[in-house]
Image (tube, rainbow, N blue to C red; front, side, top):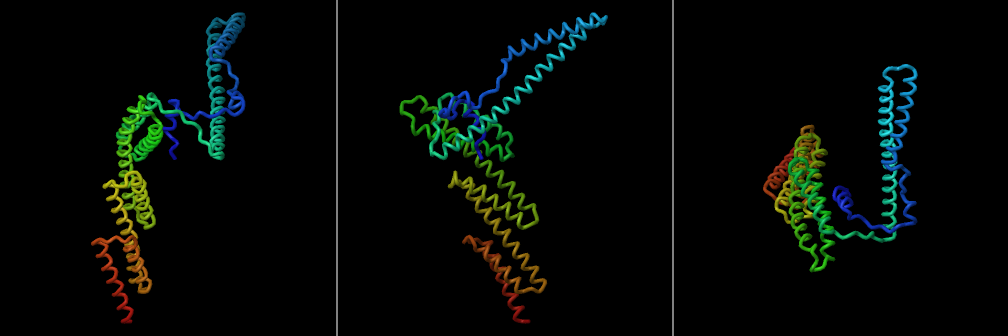
Length: 324
């Protein structure tokens, strides 16, 4: 998903792929012919002045008192049109050129993948490193201001993760006496802190939103989906920080919540079936509830109380059936 902000930043700072040239360079994505801006505007001005004097002469010979004003208006309209026309055509040409380059880049990347060759990546210089760190800090500050938006935090920790991967690659190959060593180590330490902070913020906000969604909807399937998605968020965060206490506690609470949703669903259905006199189906539904209570081999006081209650209801139904 993330091919995003940091990749764009690296390309902007010059840390782009150095690809071998295939065929004559001028034949690949060649820009359409266009006059330089200075030449174009000189030509437009010349034509505009010619129009001005032509209109002025015609109107003056016709006895028009305001001939120079009308000619001047014609000159102005022509120049505005010339500027607008150039911008429209140039933008269209540039759009086609960029689209062509993107297609060419994708095709070239596919070639690399097919032949198993990785394009050479330029090293991360001190200047590029500083620019990337500055961009990450800027995004981090913005995410803190927009604190309730999980996507803002996600963008930052993904940028941090991408930078840390590049940083690790550079540190493996860097010489002991390199002046880049201190800068890269310092950058790694600061970005690791930001990565942890924003990932935990993202996980907290996402799980809170999904938990609220699970509590507000009425259909069991929607409740289960929201709770399952919340657990997936925590699982994603635990891949980075498997010993983080807050994540582990949240994971346990969400699993209890999911179990409670499923057990409550089957208990309610069992109670309705028992009320209608369908005791066999009611017992089957109660057993489904017991299955979800013990499915993940977690023991707790609440689960034990729920299991005792469900077994008691099953026994009551069995006695009713025996009595009839």
